[in-house]
View 1 (cartoon, rainbow over the protein chains, first blue to last red):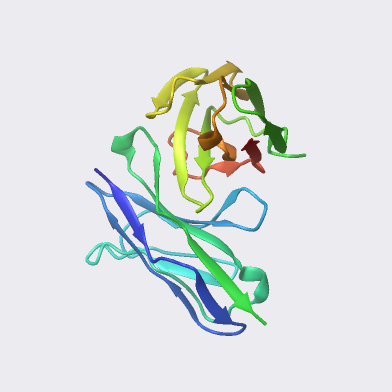
View 2 (tube, rainbow over the protein chains, first blue to last red):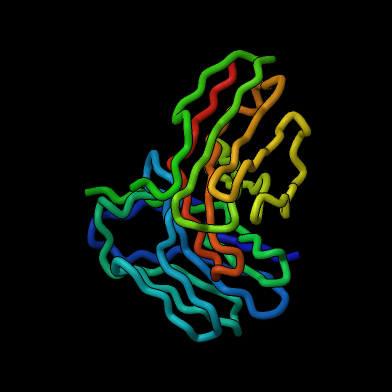
Length: 113
Length: 113
């Protein structure tokens, strides 16, 4: 079945560092890909998405490019802030799966001032 | 103005008790979900309803019973609570086929002692 694999956390960086959180997927067909973010004590919220190969999703300085050849959707940000500390979830949606999101395990990001 | 609301936010109870969590969304969505998030932040889908019809029913103990009185509400009743039920429970909503954007409630932290 479909699956999503994320790099294990926690990822600890200093403020203004470059961020990459790796995400790879296994899916039949042409899934849509997502990054959700969960700030401490809150529910998840959509950060960005891409619906087809080579699409780039971006929001709040974060970017991710849908790479079909490497089945990846890595999350990047050029300069992180303390306020980016959160748990980041990669997910995919395959229309064949009853529109159920398939979730990665989440990656906790800690940014130190 | 809250899009997806859950009550209560915190629930502390003893083993063997029965409890309910309520969820309401005012986004006009046709699909609602219950997720369980464990202490390692792993997110597991439990149930999904589309227009009051159960469409996803993952492997969950039958002590858990969802009820959707209308498409804006989805409640979760748990019988005979066990220690392992301690977790954060999230309600979410979306439009089915709405390209994967789910809106999450703030979560209910259930602690079973």
